[in-house]
Length: 275
Ligand SMILES: C[S@@+](CC[C@H](N)C(=O)[O-])C[C@H]1O[C@@H](n2cnc3c(N)ncnc32)[C@H](O)[C@@H]1O
Image (cartoon, rainbow, N blue to C red; front, side, top):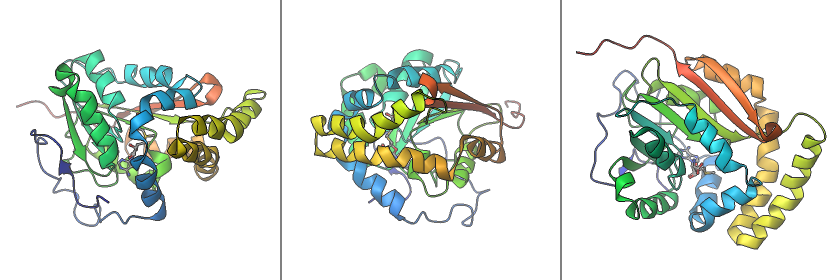
């Protein structure tokens, strides 16, 4: 179980070390709480079917949601973006393809990163632009404002303190940088709410079983994880976490009647003049 600071997964190094402005208090060791331990175990068995199964379990909508999130980043060629919870590197690859940028993909699961490395091995043009790092969203091994933009996908349901994690994510983004995320949601209106409930509680675990034992577990997990998350952190409360983290202009886009939630904002502050 990785609890140490980021472990290198290729020959390229982060631009600088951890911020000195955030002392030990702000970066206290991340205890492997039950939620984190569960996430580590859950994703250890998923990489093999991840891309295909992820699309199936989202009713074929996930690639569309992911594309909308990537489009909201508005990066310029040559910029540097951090993709947190990069998993098998789907978002990192989409970012490079769309914007011609450098991406650091960070994830706490060695197994998911191994699948990302296998993807990059098949695409040298992507491998040249993507650096993979094992690390934790709650304690990023980067300096303040080190990245031009940041993305994270399906992360906050797995952390113990989403508000604190958002502060840590925002910390490493330069003022004016875009922060964009994607998460499952819950449709607010009928009949979509009832249909989505039936899908996540009934069809999703059954579909998972058709892929593998691990995916059956994911199906069962998602059926409770999504409603539990929004019971603890409703959408408007999540927006206050973003704002408290120093992210302005926060916008929440509900997709597929609210089954997908794309949230975007801009890091507060003024960018320092170059030189
Ligand atoms: C559902 S997958 C999403 C992967 C990828 N973002 C995508 O959309 O394809 C969630 C990922 O979050 C990672 N993860 C969960 N908690 C994390 C944490 N605290 N720090 C870093 N990665 C984490 C898991 O290891 C897993 O790869």
